[in-house]
View 1 (cartoon, rainbow, N blue to C red):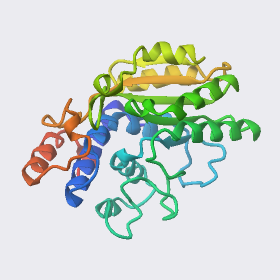
View 2: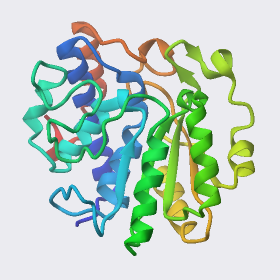
View 3: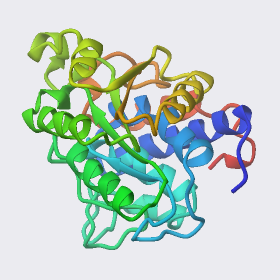
View 4: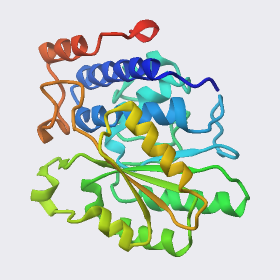
Amino acid sequence: MTKKSIHNLEAIVQQVRRDIVRMVHACQSGHPGGSLGCTELLVCLYFELMQRKEQFDPNGVGEDLFFLSNGHISPVFYSVLARAGYFPIDELATFRKLNSRLQGHPTTHEGLPGIRVASGSLGQGLSVAIGAAQAKKLNKDNRLVYVLMGDGELQEGQIWEAAMYAAHNKMDNLIAIVDYNGAQIDGATNDVLSLGDLPGKWMAFGWKVIEVRRGNDIGSVIAGLRKAQDSTAKRVPVMVLLHTEMGNGVDFMMGSHKWHGVAPNDEQLTSALNQNAETLGDYIA
């Protein structure tokens, strides 16, 4: 698989942002804020960092796996999968429509390539990823498993049960990532239910913790996840705390929890598209 330059990755990021706002605008439903905040991460994973097959393999043998736990940010996931060649790009226009394979939260019964598990019931993704990582160990498959969670999602108790299990069983082929934007649907995480010393919590649970302070900078994301990859196979699971900004790349959405699950109107769509139309090159659409 051909790796992309930073310039090309940035162009893909801009295109994915355009996809996100178009998809959510078209159906006047969905979650643009977190999707925009995680765009750099998913682009870097699928176009630079993950070892994956050109054609989707439902079994995932001999390749890295990714699980989206906070399934409400499906717009960014669908866009990246389409741009990475898993299904036709024009299918993005069916987002959240009746009988579409692109439902508001990813599901499996429609058979959409790239989707390995239904998600969106928050708190479950880490458990699923641990199961996949354990299966890889049993099958002597040395590829990695990635899982993305939201920071508000960490208020779910199941995550901390899974965290104990992963450390106890030395799941060192697992890289968990938290979208650490400090916001959730009802406001700031510190106001809803403070996460406290999050790095300290994960370390106390027996995880290797890596913080990426500039989670919307491609170079920083790649460097942080390379460090995470280098930290695997050392008998501890790896946690990446990725500091992002909700709504990143669209000025009127940035830093506001109000865009967690609100669609832009026609005028706002035009503004958002204009903000993500530079240096797109071959990727513009």
